[in-house]
Length: 379
Image (tube, one colour):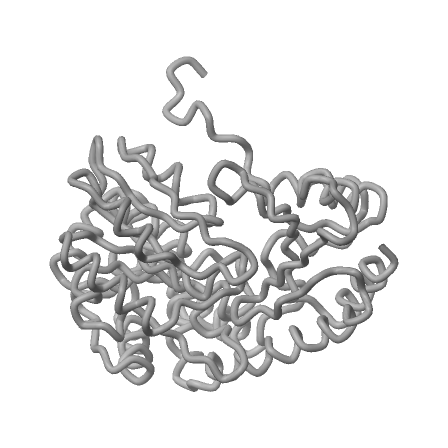
């Protein structure tokens, strides 16, 4: 289109690889979604909410009971209270929450620091509002943030830092020390922060999620975004939420009301009832850790180099001892010739740096993981 607002934005790698998986009838470990069903109890609650008549617009910020449940959940986990009336908004997935937070804050000429590899919605959303992303590359295999480099990137144009922990695609976790460093930089330079916490409940090996909510000076300037879809195995519902102090949430809701106004009402009613039992989300670490461990046990004799994921339902596989091909070429060959779709990670890196790693999703049935492992072990 003439005068496109995003002339250089390609088709998402997730769409490309999922389409390729369908074309070649490949096992799809590429796009991050479970291939098992949500809890039948939750599905029944949605049906009941519809039958009980919750089929018209929800309140613009979301169902108050659901916002109250979220407030209690965050306070129990992180000792920080968000006011359900003024500091929580239910969104059409975390991506909408991220977009809306960017729309509410970023103006022409602003700079936003991101950590690459980065989820691919950050950069185009910033660009739409005249901003520019400044990448800080996380280096394989540890993907540890270099806060001295972050400090060198901050200047008079810097408006925001976006973080993601647990981190997609690496499975890395920001530590307490990382969050304290972020808090110091953001406070010293009066920066906004988006903390993308969609995998907040998927953390392994006894680690704790270091939410931005835990750090008072950081929470005071941060939009926290989260996803019911990731938590409750229903990514197609596109349900999430945003937390922010009242002054930021007021700006967020100015945009939210004209982007979607409100989101799926019966699902909100169902989630509010479902989450009254905290085990619905507190059981997730053990559930996914078992899947990770089983999948890695299947690959223990493969030629891939593997650092176990600390969180998310993704695992990186280093193929540097198998082939010198680029990760894109290798991922395409895996799909077309061997029947397994994965994600090449260079597409998320600064300057498309290739660490010879592919990302796989292990939120799959055991039979799917076994079939995928058989292919990977044969390489």
